[in-house]
Amino acid sequence: MGEQKYDRLNESESINVKVQDIKEYEEAAPDNIEAQDDINYPTHNTDSTGSLIKFMFWLFCVCFSLAGVQFVYSIQFALGTPLFINKFKLSNSTTSIIQSIAGPVSGFVVQPIIGVYSDSCKSKWGRRKPYILFGAVFVVIGLLVIAFSPQIGELFGDKADGATASDHKSGLAIAIAGFVVMNLSVNIMQGPTRSLVSDVCPMDKQNLANSMAVNVMGFASIIANIIGSFFATNENSYRDLFVIGAGFVAFSVVPTIIVAKEKQLDSSVKSPSSPLEAFARIKRAFATIPKELALISLVFFVSWFGFSPFMVTNTSYFQQNVFNGDSEGLKFGFYGQAVFSAVSFFFSFFLSGLCNVFGEKIIYSASQLVAGAALILFLVFDHAQPWLAILLTGVVGINFCVFNAIPFAMMVKVISSKDIGLYMGVLNSSAVVSQTISIFTSGRVEAAKDQNVAWGIAYGGLFTLLGVFLAFILPKSKKVSEQINEASPLIK
Image (tube, rainbow, N blue to C red; front, side):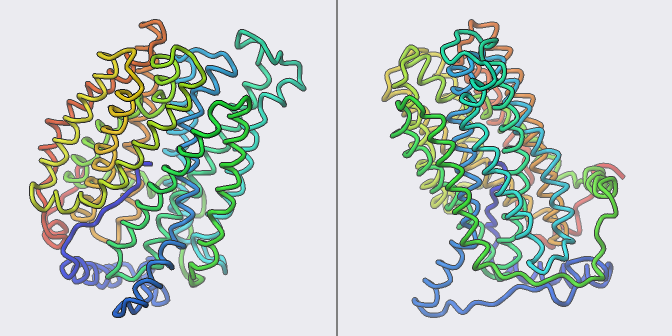
């Protein structure tokens, strides 16, 4: 969810600058992967309508494994909290601890390491596809473990109708293990998938490739929540939806594996000799982060801090606050999330034009203001009518689209192209650290307010409103060539 990128540079400027960067980098670091003669961007003829349609279909297939990634995130956040609360009888605050550890921490640790290793993978299948396939296999395993965790727990003595968490100890432990496996594996799958899209797409089609990646993920999120709404009131809704998720992930990697053609790396490319060396490379990236990227990361951190409590408790709000614990609330929670995903998906088509007219800072600040107000209104209308809860949920989708687009577009403008993959992990790290702290602390707020999730959502809204002002510290847009010459390390 934190890795979406929109490159809004003028294409002719972007291409000229990046080619110049690559040439300079080849001279300075001939052993680097990007300096290898056999790693280049393929060309695709899109002059005619037919060839353009063919290219777009090919690009859709390349990106399609990201649909599996997003499907996992959608059902995890829509069903994960209700599963632990309704099925395993945990409190909201305890569930927030599980959610704050399983997902964000694994993303912080796994994605940067996998990024370093996949950059130098010499498999005959390519750099990225082995990791995508490996991650997908274990995502499926994790989803199936979660799906059948209550039934497996009963085999080990759990009480099917138990009223307390102690009656579900075995199933709970199995479900948590499944969540850990799923989150570790989806991060193994996610990073290489985004890198693959850039690897195999021509340089002059990179903007289109990133837009397609975002649109595929938005489409998957809409589908996941629509399917979820049909199964939400079933007796075994958790089992059914996690099983469907496993099948969707398995299917999603097939088009990507088939159509994405990677070249095997030359044996001279150096791989990290150990995880410690991989961590050393990541540490250097943090230590030498340019000041402009540090400011972008700070704003990104605050945006995720405000959004995260909403992300993990929105469906619980529908069930507990709107429908007073009735299972119908979960169904409407899926409706709300589907509207949220649709708003984010469609707004992405207009974002570039709005930024061109009003500027990135104004759009960023305005979206934070609208979302911050909406998040606080979840508490003001503590027991809202379903239509109002869906409306507030949908409004937040605008902000989600903006803060997952503009920071990555700005990053492209302040980082030399040879370092974008590395610093993508750095920027993503600010998001996962933010999620961990935000979900944990919002859980403490909910615990102090009789487990009312509306308080946690409104708590996040305060930080979203802080983002209204922080948006103006974002760096001024410049050409990449200017930023490469002017950017200075935060720590020398």
